[in-house]
Image (cartoon, rainbow, N blue to C red):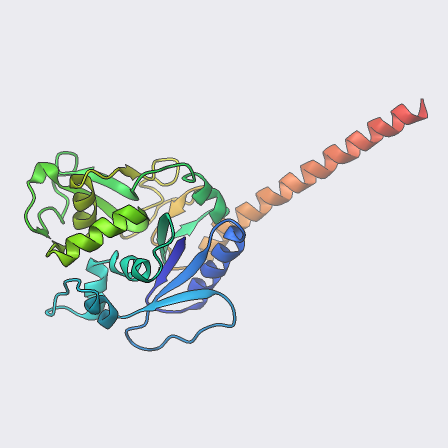
Length: 269
């Protein structure tokens, strides 16, 4: 299951959703995971979607901060929408969540296929410990308190949960766990004995993936954050992929013509 998450609808968001659906058709189910707290969602003629609101999150018994805006609540709890979907659709083995401003240069299906045989309970970017990144902002932003050497952090734009991982996190929140998802979720799972792994440097690196910007565009890599407001993204990502595919087709046709000529000569003999 692949959940493409957004809190607004725009041409770039719709384009990427369609790209996901086309690339993954027949192999993965894609659902648009939409924050409908404002009640502004208008369903399209095609495509599956799941709506959640701050009210539906609260009804599940998850902690919310009444002193911040709804948007900030969901920013601090990027896992809540996945849990909301899981509670109503618990039959899948794994649940990917891809945020609206993530792009993959290439076919999305190729990215997901890389992890088809990975049985980790939780996959994310920038898996870290206190000892590896002591200056990270979110350490100790969780309740109940956990010793720093047992805390684990991550970055949430692209994540994958196993069914078991979601059930463990759900129970932890219902039992009083609180805090920012990027420290709460991996810490809960690690201390529960579940397996956690990084998506790895073959899928992203610091030049393509960051919290505020990316510096390079690389084929076969995840990129974040991409707002798609610049023509440069199209010219430097979509166009090279198109040209590369065109080159492959031209080379294939050339090889076919060469093979036909060899066969023709052999027949004439």
